[in-house]
Length: 250
Ligand code: PGA
Image (cartoon, rainbow, N blue to C red; front, side, top):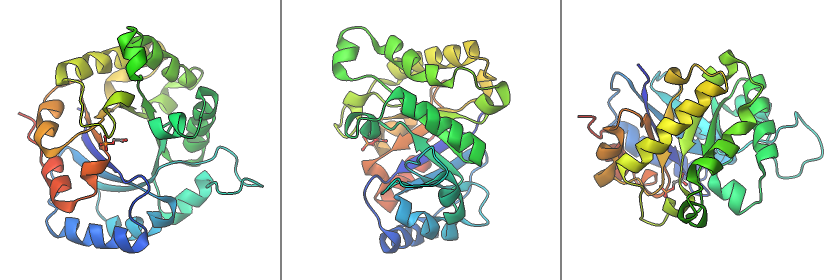
């Protein structure tokens, strides 16, 4: 049985002080639930603060939002996998929509980042998803397949350590959602493609992201194909985050 993963993507919010304050408030009411994990993708400078507060809690995980694929060197502004690990991260987002569409990250780069993360012991959560124009052109599945193709050549053990987040670009930060049924259909296609690539696909968690809120999280995770949610805006408020993490599965 795949665990349900509730992952907050704080984007460029919550420095170390803010992260500590958020977690103090959130953790005061957090109750571990069997089969549920709560992940926090923090800005690089806040990872250590998050890691310190989640230490010793098996259901919680500190993650970073981006890493560089090189181990070290003249890459001003970048963070290596080893540095992220040293700060306490155990997971990283790769290829988030904003990395791709605001910073021009390519499929080739996401492929390098996935490999660097796997080699360095970080769990990569590869984000995929189509733009509105691509959806309207009927290209959703083709785009997602192309974005997953960077996984070709990884072995089954490596693929089994991946997590995938399906985030339609048009749904991120817009208040618009794919319906749970539409999302589940894309998730099914992603799982099928992972299987073709040699992954133990029934063990890989596939999260949905894009304007997930307390009032729609339950319907999303009720779909058996949807193994959790990746949440931006609504992960920044301890109360709405708690409501999402508690979203009922049935
Ligand atoms: P949102 O962001 O929940 O604010 O739409 C999701 C994401 O970008 O991961």
